Image 1 (cartoon, helix red, strand yellow):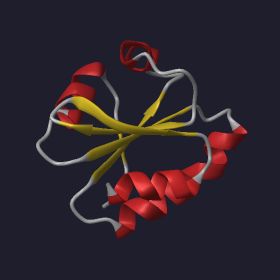
Image 2: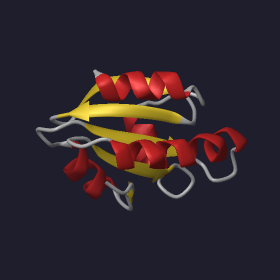
Image 3: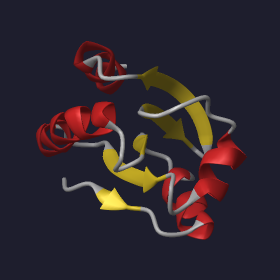
Length: 102
């Protein structure tokens, strides 16, 4: 499944409030770490059935990042029914892959 860019707080709430797992990549395009992990996140989304993948540009949508109270980017948050289920920070592909398996 391709990664979908979230463009509004309303979309964020709709996309993350689902009965199936959703993983959101919070990123900024100016971060070397974010640019490093982004292609790996895209590849992971193509290999995983049953999980939806989204991303939020925190420079364009700071209200979403702030509402979630997240510490820094890159951070990947797994949601189920609108609630945080798990999170992985940084560029550690292993942590992201573990999140997909949970």
